Amino acid sequence: MKYPLIIAFEMSSYEDDAFPIAAAWSLSSGELKSTLVSPDAEWLEQLYDQGALLDVDPESLLHEGHSAKAVLEELQLDLGDQALYCVDPYQTEQALEKLFDSLDQEHELPLRPVAELLSDHSHETREDCRQECLELLGLNEHQAADQVRLWLEMYVRLQGQRSSE
Image (tube, rainbow, N blue to C red):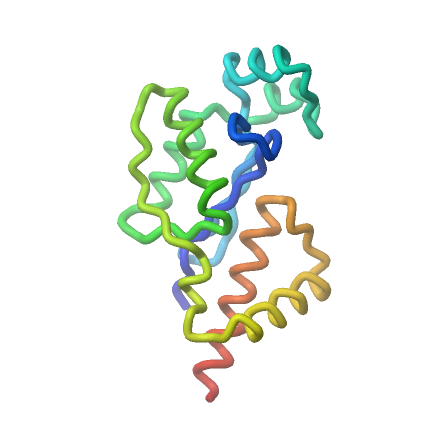
């Protein structure tokens, strides 16, 4: 089975000037990649100027995270010419724009809402499947890797359901 490429981000806040702190995406093999994102110095300066706090220690992001350049290179290498589905289109656009802006580049990755993958199923069916997967797998909807895993699991379950009908 070939799996869709799904991407999700965790952001520093819910504000418009938030920056990505973690990214996760799936591969066509069904594997999942995830990483912390090392914040750009400008992002941290803006954060400190606002007196805002992160849920994650900025030092751990700096030491354990990967640069915007490394994240984008890896993502583009994995993406190839496949469609990239996003869990939260607004947040994903915001995160990718921050990453590309830090490299003085334009964001050109074509994004599609992940719900398109399951559009032949009713909203109720998708929601029931989502709740079941969250409970059975103990996933946290606020973590990027768990968001991607959730939608991959929903895709497999609902596609399997459709092919058995």
